[in-house]
Image (cartoon, rainbow, N blue to C red):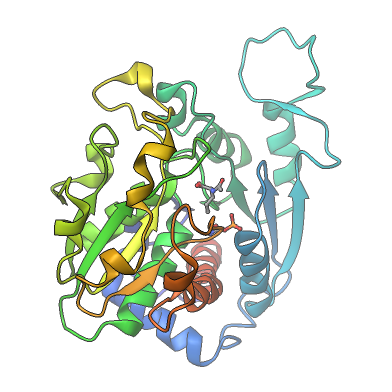
Length: 332
Ligand code: AN0
Ligand code: CP
């Protein structure tokens, strides 16, 4: 099959891996009109989806995408039936882990053509997480194309689906898009906000990030994005509100990495409600899901006509179909 894209895609972590985003968006719209247009492309090719963490959307939408392309799919839940895997080299394996990733990866790779990985940040060792240690071992030892289904620092299939959703719902040429931190009782990774910021910086939007002090995203992803610490000010005139919780990225204070900096009870005014939505430009509400109601967003806002959470999740099938298609074109 002739590869007519500007980039031979082997791995997928960042926006740049897709090349021209305008072209990628056009391709997404083409696939949305006819999901099975490239059903011949994946014939006798097998996608292996490896999950180290829970998933609803990624699990289903990526399988559906592979089926759209005529691929076979194998899903492995590492923590439900496989041997527990050691991921670090040099460890004396006398604990509960029966197998090492360094054997498991080439074995898994021998049964497939493309590998998707979900491996969340451990949130204890910033260097280990930000080096994408687990993902990079898959790249190095599988010899197969590897794509991220949320790794330690990024969730590009989500960010691409978000970009598609914004493109479909914008009412002005250059919309104002606001990424807002919101409260959550547990420590969550930075992958979703990292990728969202990275992709919005590449897109034709006016992008603003708002969060309490201390939650500054890594500059590798936040780039030159405007940070406004006053949430109400940030929301003024916004066309899209993208809510997400994340734990401390530890950019300036590595010892706080992965932590919640202040009890969420004190920060419940960050929960997205009609109060903040009222100052937007009839703003649309977005969240990657799963979402905790009345922590991240009120019932009223998520159920309002301006809520895009369901079409946004539906677009995960489209982003994954484009990404798998690009990878398949690269291995022909
Ligand atoms: C994960 C996170 O915040 O990264 C997955 C989001 C797609 N969310 C939870 O663990 C609740
Ligand atoms: N948004 C997202 O990736 O959802 P899952 O964790 O359910 O896959």
